[in-house]
Length: 209
Image (cartoon, rainbow, N blue to C red):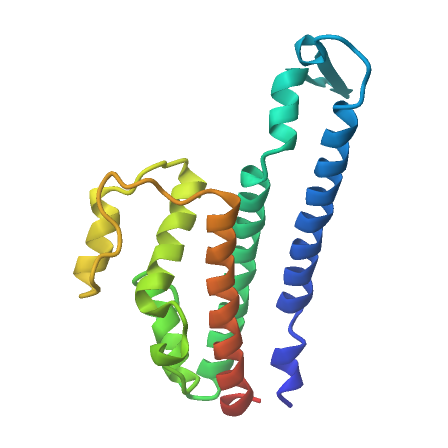
């Protein structure tokens, strides 16, 4: 039955990550508002201290309030966790497609990077890039940005641009360009993954129900 793909654990975990982000977003807004009401002069020059076991967090209150108002690091963590779920789902899809004879057993699933194996899966599931909003170029961007965030890179490199040209894909980035990392930007990338997974699921429900 197609319900196997529609009720895959990915969707539950994906929803949990979305709820987690939104809960912390609300909590940080609320906590930040409370700080503005504390009747202490020059409160930004005071210190926030949190001791947890042998570790200690110590921050100037003004800097701490800046952290409360930033969602970028949190959004990046949610995106990276979502990417892991995305890979797990795609791996399950590949195994099912290979077992059904839709793609060779000896095929190396992760060979060539996301721009290759995501296309491979789409075709095996009876879909192609015309159905995917961001296209192959957009998915490659997702993979490159994910790698950059994991390794702490702030700009795109020659190797990043070469990933496009070596695959015959028009480059949508340039060397030295800032790696998108704001909450708005990484959530757009997360949306691309979600859209791809939805299209892939539709194909899986028909080819390997």
